[in-house]
Image 1: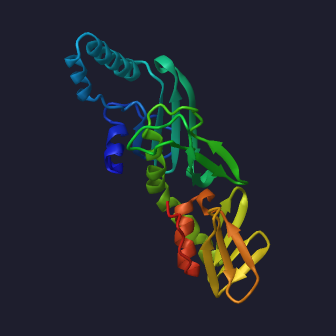
Image 2 (image 1 turned 120 degrees about the vertical axis):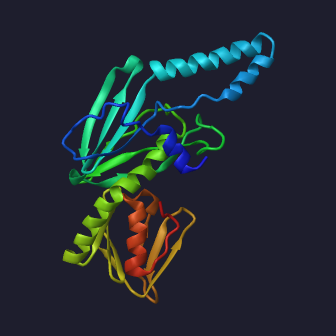
Image 3 (image 1 turned 180 degrees about the horizontal axis):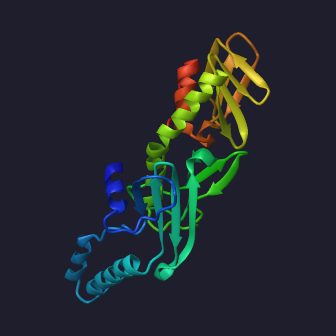
Length: 260
């Protein structure tokens, strides 16, 4: 299933949903983990005498209970921020948090291995750990549920957040580049400075001409050609990693394997 189909599956219908007003501007789009589809293929279980009908009824009851009483996560995207509402059984609100874009430096959503997550056709054995980061590098976990409530729903969110947050973040980085002549990204709190023809990690600056290569551990090694100075970056763990790849390519010419 394509990303667009996933997005259609979980998108909230604003005409049928109460969108909370939280001072973040106009509502853009919303997604809910409750939007699971019932597969009518389950009806073929009825062709199996007795046992098949029981299996079909179990699926019907599961779908009905999940739709009416089950827990869900709802993400409301606005012009100036994000609101996340989590509910438990019978719709009891567990948390309702507002995250203004102005207060956060961005987000990170790495795929993490989970041996209990084996749904075929999706991210097998993997789930998304969705986090926001504030200054100074404060991590806020948006998705801390050990077992995801809808297998493909968490994997949709990073792509949606990239689309919604991108214009906001680009304005920030372009202003930083215009005023400071460089941009700074973060990897586990470690600042990575990128400027025209150079990369600086902590106190180590590597200037052009630059060479780069991934090692066996998945680390991006960048070095000065003909020199000894080098840095190592785990770019899969960088906040706003897609934009990191773009600015690294734009300012230094280095292509990365991690682009989203």
